[in-house]
Length: 176
Image (cartoon, rainbow, N blue to C red; front, side):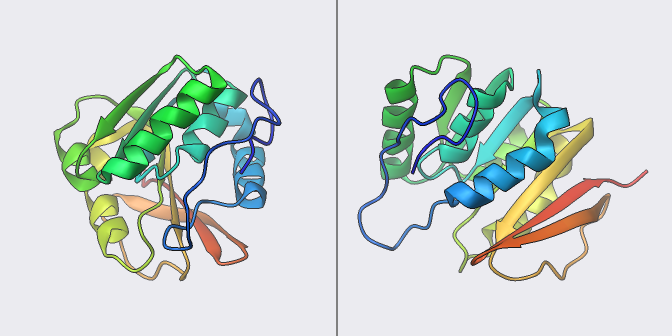
């Protein structure tokens, strides 16, 4: 894994051993941030179920003002911390805890929320149902999964969907 663009461009990150955890690919991250490029500068970004932290670190590299990283898994939190230290990042908060609970309890508002739960869990759908509390007025949510999103989330509407290998990115915004 490497950072694709921005101030940390070309830096490699520590990854997971084995195949149990599937990080967002370099190609998917590059495409995601090309889509988000006009929304990045100065944004508050939430990397929920952060894994290695690669998506949030890419966001910091490209100019967001702040990233909150959250993951329940202790190894993921430690790996994210190692990667943040490796690139020298400073504008972040790293939390270890339940992502759905974090969305319910936070009083911080995020302009971009990236939700990348384990594919075989229901955590993504549960997080989407709680995301309104943490989403800024004009904020967007990106949900990564391997299947098309087929549900309905009150207060959110899908405005784009892209597929990159196994990964499918679904983009949501507040309904007006």
